[in-house]
Amino acid sequence: MAGTVADYKVLRDKSFFLEDKAGKDTKRFGFGLPGKFHGGSGPSHMGIFSFGLGEVKADLKFDIYLNGEVVYHSGYVKSLPLSQSDRTIQEAFDSSILRVQDNEVTVQIREGSGRFHDLIIWFQRDT
Image (cartoon, rainbow, N blue to C red):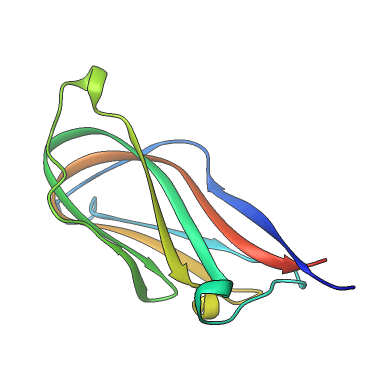
């Protein structure tokens, strides 16, 4: 009996810093998924995008796009002391926007600055 299992793809393990200055406000990552990727729309086909965020030095607003579609639109993320600033964020999204090849994640700052790390896409694939 065929089924699906959860799988993931690490897009970025190292951190990167973005700020609301021209040329320093956007970072893009390309990636592909396995041929057995199981996409679709509706609750049973959702994907999850997770990432770490730290070193928020000014109140931060940012967007994360997957293949041109907004998957995360932040309100203000308040700056905190460095020892308290690291957090992990997860966001469910409709996996019909994913493709087997030629996917792109874009992180774009609208205001403020912060350090992003551990960008991971969770998806379903056929067994």
